[in-house]
Image 1 (cartoon, rainbow over the protein chains, first blue to last red):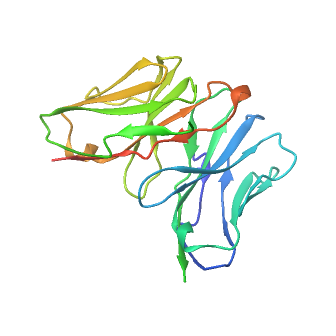
Image 2: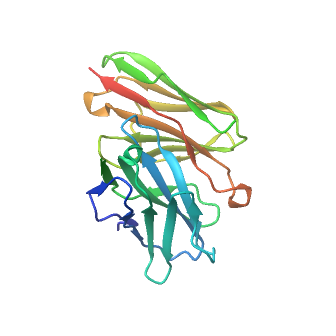
Image 3: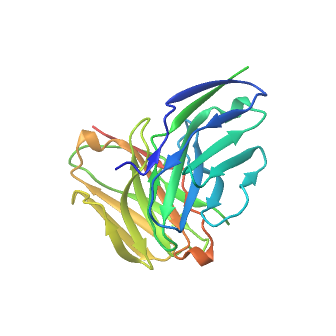
Length: 115
Length: 115
C-alpha cells in the first residue's frame, strides 16, 4: 500500500504567488516524521522542512510552511511568494517509528514558476 | 560541515567495466544510505548502513556491492551493469537515533550511464 500520496503530478504558479502542494500519508505508528524535499534539475535533494508527529505547532522555515492536519493524515507544503528558483520537483517523505531508518517517498510534484 | 559529498558527479561505463561511486560525510552521522532514482520518479532505497554494518539490502542485484570502510565513507562498487541501471545514484546520511536529530542529508548524486 502506498504510504505517501502526492496527487498533483505538476503545477504552474505565477511568480510572487503562493502555492500549496498536497501530501497525504498512511501509518499506524504513533511516532513518525514527515519531510519535504526539493529536487532541482541538477539532482540534489534539498531538505526544506520537517514535522514530527508529536509537534504541536505547524513547522515553518522561511517561505516554507507545513499545514499539518494529523486527523486527516495530511501534510501539505505551502510555498509563499514563489520565486523562479522554486521551479523543481518536490517530494513528501515519511519516516515511521522513532528509530527507523527508511524514508518512504511520494511520487513527487513538479512545480513550474512563471514570470 | 553539513554536506554529503559524492564523486564522481557523472559516470559513463560499459557493461563489462568495474567502477565505484564514493560518498563522504563528516557530520558524525552513523546511518548512511544508497538510493537509486530514475528520471521523474522518487528515490528508491537500495542499502542502509548503521554503525558501519549493512542493515538493509532492498533485494538489490549482486552487481551492486556496497562497502562502508569507516563511519564517514560509503562506497558502491559496480560490476557488469545493464543499461537499465542507468540512473541518478544518491547517497544520504542521518543520525542513527531520533534523539540525535532527524535530518537526512543527501548528496548531489552521481549520474550513471551504462552503455
